[in-house]
Image 1: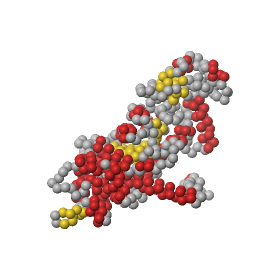
Image 2: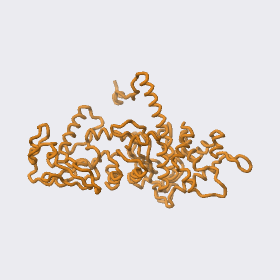
Image 3: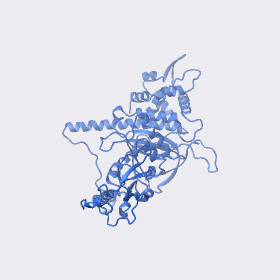
Length: 494
């Protein structure tokens, strides 16, 4: 269990306690439970694998040693002697804090004050030595059920009016798609940079939104606000659910914030999608008009592909890269850049570019150039507006081997949710938190992620110590044991 001192250090570093105290109304007499002690109690309850109930928070505080209780104000000297914190006081202070951080008119999205408080808590939970260790984030969303019953079928109010019906998928036998009543939890997990050292997979940003809101649009302002806080963005890894959104909803604001997208393209966005100045628009790039159609229609490599199949696929994507128009300039202030014909750049041989016919024959050759060449063939360069590939452009060519290796880091987002949903630690299924409304649930969920970050930190330190011990003994680092046989072969009859 993480010690109390660690949580106090995180709360103090975040600066949320004094801000929250200034927002709470003053009563007739001073409150015994401060905002700082309340947050520490929530973290202690989550660290002890307790559900997110205020009774558990009260138990976590009153079970501390007596000297700690006096220091935190859990035991205070009243007129008639020492007084121990009651559950009613815990409930009252938490209610005041939730009301102060909530919107005057709840709409299913967190208030600016609530989001800032959660961002500060998560950022403070990351050790200083890892804050600049990586700029890459893997993003995803998951379901988080409300304890409230859904509204009646005939209409009417319910206990959780901000919650809504959402859709989720499961890996259990039976139907894969099902509905749930609650919220979407979105998170950004730290991942190692390309060719960079390994880093602990800390949850760096998180937000919640009602299922009536798009979780992608809810996460965008949280991520794009990071550079203003002195946290530059690097690679942002996302699946096709993010890439399939309108460019103005996801790709454009992320690029404007300095991020480089590495994402899986939706099947509807793959392959040729029109032309620009004669060049074929496909998978976020522009290609020569004479590019073979099978190369343009290449899809991603299957997960169960054999090594020889991967080699063939990679050779095709490498050949496709020969037909891609080469970039000559960076994006200007308006997002425009210039590209050039691949034959003029020496990547392939084409009769329309006589100088390219003197190149080695190991390059692809255009046997039948267009009868009526357009601007991409006749002009020395062409200008590409930002809207041409705004939705699908990304750091690596899709679906090349470089893209596949880089995109493999996105599974860190799924591991982040798996560690937060692990029944051995905190099972955040329905009933884990019985408080209604987005604000109380988001506060408890953020504290859970803070506790989860400390578990990741402890496991990382233990693993590093073990590797150092093995290196001192002349042993190689410990590696994961991988299953050598498929489950189907083990279950097959003899």
